[in-house]
Length: 117
Image (cartoon, rainbow, N blue to C red; front, top):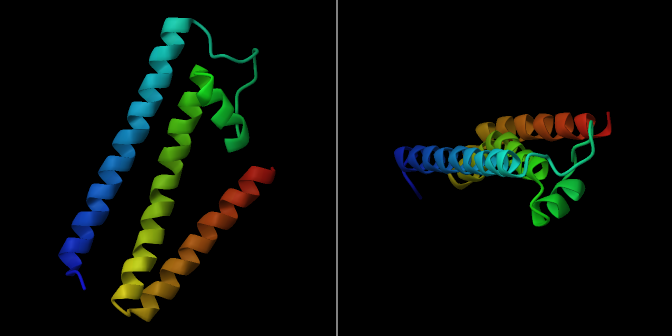
């Protein structure tokens, strides 16, 4: 079993890598937008779901790449909570497992509600 300090270092490293990666993806999308002079979509349209974003990223559409970076940024804290559930379970800290699961459920429900509205 890992020491709590090791777990915190792992989670901290994960958060730094995730935020840096999302920043790089957003910057690439912005650079592509500046080079192409357009977002790759008609006026007042942009991809909002992963099913719209993925084909746009494959086609190198700047707005889709920026949206992917934003999705990565949004999912970073959700992954952090999921990692916490795993680490708390390994430590057999059942109270914190349940608390983290409730937080994770709230985050997922919020995303689902946001997706349908």
